[in-house]
Each structure stands twice: as structure tokens, then as C-alpha cells.
Length: 184
Image (cartoon, rainbow, N blue to C red; front, side):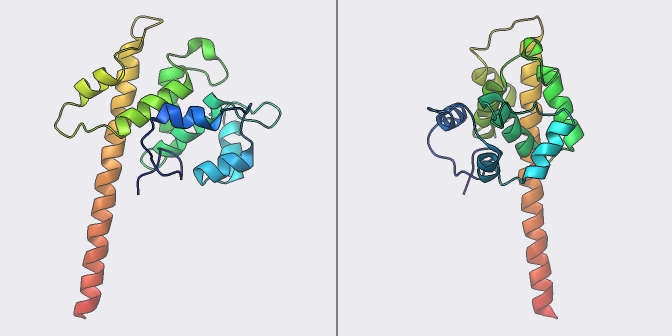
């Protein structure tokens, strides 16, 4: 079973951006219980990210689409990166958490790109070409924005590859342990 990145929701044939947009169809935001159900996180984890400045505070206890996207991104990357490195990567792309004027892309757009790169088939060694295709419609606001976005997406991709290799290695080690126990 493959889930949308950062969530416990099984991947369907819609894009990550459509998945995120669908959650906000007719609602002004999600409350903490919905965030926890969506991500498998607990309330203290999300509150910790807010207290550290990695996530902006909800308005009237509701999280908007960009905040939910950021939660999903952090939750995705925390498996293979320290939380400080995750925040550093998000800062590299979008600067200060509470200031959208320094963003390269909205958090929702970034989540869509991350979903696209996560579900891409770039196993033939053309990750740069795959990323170029994913961000082909991206418009720079400032010189260098496209390069920063592509670099961040490459880091996300490589992080996902590392996670898959670590998972495969863990499964192999578990088999070794099982077989060793059977021999004794």
C-alpha cells in the first residue's frame, strides 16, 4: 500500500495537489483532530512544530491548505532527515514561516511537486530531467528561484530513495534474524 506523502491515506489516481485541494472543498480549514487523523501524528508533535516556529499558528483553531501541506511535508521528510534539516530545507525554499512574501511557491504547490517527484519513475538516472518536467510551468519571482526549487526537490527525491533502501535493508536483516533463529 502506498500513501500520499506524509499521510495515512492510500494513494489514488489523483495528483497530490488534487488530494490536498479535495480536503478543503467547502471548508475553511482543518482542526487538529482532522490533522491527526490525516497524518497519524499526535497533537503534541504538531504543537511542538508550532512552538519551534516551523509551522505558523492556526487561525481560530483551523489550519489552512498551506499549513496542512507544510505538516504533510514535514511528516514525509522526518523519516529520513532530522527535523532541523527538514526545517532548513523548507526555509531554503520559502524563508520565514509566517511570511509568504519570501516564498518561492506556496506550501500547497510545493506539496504537489513533492507528490509528483515521489510518484515519478525516475529510476533510469534522469532525475534532473524528471524534475525539469515537473516544474516546467514554474515561474520565477526572483532570479535563482527555479534552481532552489529544483535543488530542494532533488533532495526530497534522494531522501525518498534512501528511505526505500533503508527499508529494504531492514527487511533483509529481519529475514536473517528469522533464519538464524530457525537454525539454532
